[in-house]
Every structure is written in structure tokens, then in C-alpha cells.
Image 1 (cartoon, rainbow, N blue to C red):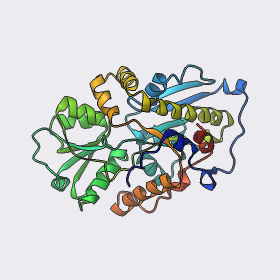
Image 2: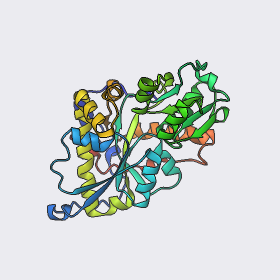
Image 3: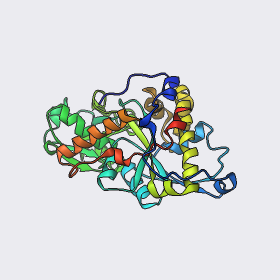
Image 4: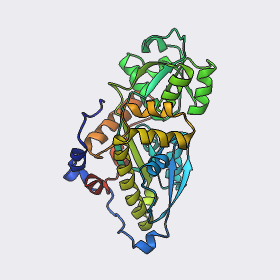
Length: 330
């Protein structure tokens, strides 16, 4: 599952036409009036240095025709639990949380997709670690947030080395707890994503044992609750939100220093960390097409084959392309 080849922004905007872009939901509510939309409060789930910081930096929150209520989560899986339960309407997550949510038959649907560098999706070891290759992880403890993109990354990286998750001792920890355990040498390695990767490298002298290049697909998704999508007012707000989010991501590609500065201000991370996290390239919108869905299906099948998830997950059933045509128009 390799990254797509670099595609000019204009090409991205014009791509993905035809039947692949048709909504998977049979009943899409009609848009509401401006007066009705003004009464909507969109509940958005966020992660550290995520959508709120990005949208603010890109100037996409100044003229909202509805209100936003933000909720912050430690990683994608608890965010999607809240989406499914109706606690939040939409949130941005990596490539693995929607698969775990789908396996649990959550009431969610991916409504837009982006792709970024996978260099920050890393397996880290502490300074002075004797581990020199992925094969050296056999029998070692690896910290990772269960169901996160890093969980997918460690699975694929182990597979490439001829190992499985049963050959290591996975220790399920959220990033803040894993960072502490990593620094205290309570775990032998840590599978994580940026900005935590850059923070560990710069502040704890962590060494990258391997990263996502050649294995990870680099996709992220905006995922909404199916109940939220069926509500006319909330659906109209989500429609507007996903378009603004895409604009903000395109802005970040050409304004990396401004994005790094805003990211640091929002999170309290040093600007050196956020610069490093953005240096390899921010996420940019890509069409939510059959290529994306197929790549996610491969990842879902890998989890099933490894025994992490029971049975088969049909990822396409948890995708809703109702906004794709407008997203591709830019």
C-alpha cells in the first residue's frame, strides 16, 4: 500500500468522476435555509494539533454560518466511539480507526479523504537501544494506541519482516502514557505518528527503527455519524465543514511555516517539533474513490488475517460519498 504518486492540486480537484462518486446513502437530506443553518451547533471531535488549529490558521473559521462545539480526544478510536454514539458529529482520524469502528458495526461513515507523508508514522526506539531492525522486535514490548493508525503501521511493518503481532508484546497505551513509558524504558519500542514522532526524536533523542514508507497508505478521513448525516441541518453544516477542511489542507501545503507556527501555538509544542512534523509534507485532499477504499480494504483484511479483528470487514459499507463531487470542484 504505497502513497499515491504526487498529483498537482488541480488534477486532484478534477479527478474522481463517474459512478465511483455517487453517494452510498439513498436518502440525503435537502440543504436547509441560512436561517435554519444558523441554529445548528456542529459538534466536532479533534486531536492534538488537529483540525481546529489548522482551520484557524487557514482563516476558515471566521465566517461560519453555524456554531462549532469542539471536543478533544487522545486518538482516533475514542473519537469515533463518540461519533458513533452521537456525542460528536464528525472528526478527523487516521487510516485504522475507521476499520476498527466498522468491525464494531459503529454508526459512522467516512465522508472525505486526504493523504500525507508516512515518514512520521514511525517505530521508535530509545537512544542506546540495541535494536537495529524490525526483526529484532521479536519478543520485545511495543507501545501503541489500540486501533490507531500506528496499530496498522506496526502490523504492516511486522508483516513485511516476516513477523506478526503475536511475535511481539503489544502494550496498548495512549500517546501521552506511551511517551512516559518510552522515556522511562518501560517499553522497548513505540509505534506512533506525528507530531509525537518528531517530539520524541527532538526532545528524547529517539531513533527511528522503521517508518511507513513502502507500507502505509498515508490516508486520513473525516468521519461522520450516520445519525448526524440524516439530520438536514447537521448534514448541511457537515457539508460546509468538509469543504472548509479541504481548503485548509490545501492552504497548509503551500504555507508550511505558518501552519507550523499555528500548530505550535495551539498545542504548546515547540515550533521546532511542528516544523519537523510538517517538513515532509502536510495532508492534502484526495478523492474518496475506489483506490482509497481498496487500500483501506487491504488494511482491514490484514488485521483479519492477523487475528486482530474477527471475521471480515467490508470497508465500503462505511463510506458515504455524498460530498465528493463538491469536494472535487474545490
